[in-house]
Length: 473
View 1 (cartoon, rainbow, N blue to C red):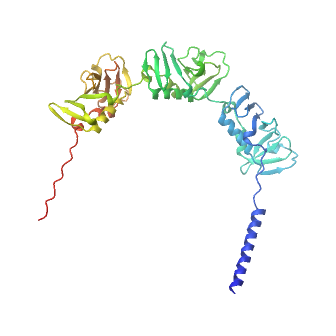
View 2 (view 1 turned 180 degrees about the horizontal axis):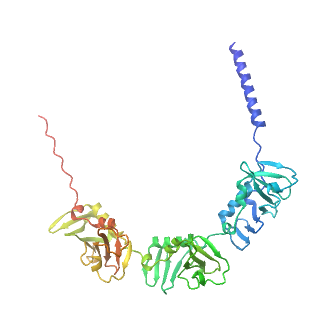
View 3 (view 1 turned 120 degrees about the vertical axis):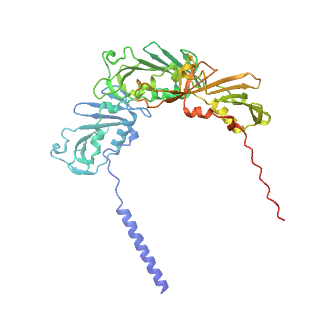
């Protein structure tokens, strides 16, 4: 009995397995038929013909897309690649009529677009004629130029093939990469020139004076320039550029790379058309006029103060032997002691200092940077409260010679009636200067608070000695 049941189970399993195999083999979906049998990577050129215009783009093997018609210019690589992929991926969802007597009902008597491809093998594929979208459903009528059959494809296909020149041309303004730039020059219409040069991994301002440049500010400036995109294409071959303010530009930025190769961006007037807020620009080596968004120009219109390094005092904490600090009414000295220790001297009292707190204080002082340079040289310390500073820190080296002094101030400013949006009460401003130079810097309240430390903060904590538990009798 048990043997017979086993045989029945095996037979049923074979029947079920055979049925599953039959269903999987004979009912599997056939691969979708493509409108054209081509892969995106094999497409060398795309010709889009419309009733009123033609756009032709092409690329060499492994190269970038270029527009050949109606103008010769760089093509937008993303838009071109997406176009090639959309054409190659187009599939036939249904054949409507193998031999239609009239193409007019399908919008194919006068196609909205004829798409023609050429492959890298030199093969010119049949053109795709694009017609109307269907009244219902999500389909569109298409046919190929070598066959009479009218087919259906996705309704997204006609929109994807309806391109303008502005959509397909490149919006990149500069071809340099940030890391390729070795020098740049900012020239303004007031005659001011700023020149910044790379020296290894550092940047130096060489005109109008010699200063260390702020690497973050320089990279932000160059990134803005290199990443700038065209907002609008204005004129490809203008008879004159004076109407755009580009004959005598307000600002010219020139970057230099390898072999002293250069590119320039010229910046002119603001657009005056209704609803437009772009700024006219052009490449110094090219004729076309474009616009960019205002924020691009704002980020490029920099001053020497903007680009300068804003370190208040440069020093190495390991070289510091003593710190003379006047913080408010407190006056104390931090002295380096043998064995990597520090002492706190306050009046006639010397006690151990908290090493971690002292070292953190020195690091914060070394990292002290201004938000902006307010003046250089400082005309007078009085307007900035630096004639009576809130904090004065003097550093001395192991030989007893001073390494530098930093002064910080905190002043209350009463708003005036001329200040738009001024708060009802006074605001507090913070400033810093040092013996490293004559500049006065604005600093933030948090930065000020990090250095506004009384002597008690530096005092080493003494661990309380636990009281011994009395022994039980």
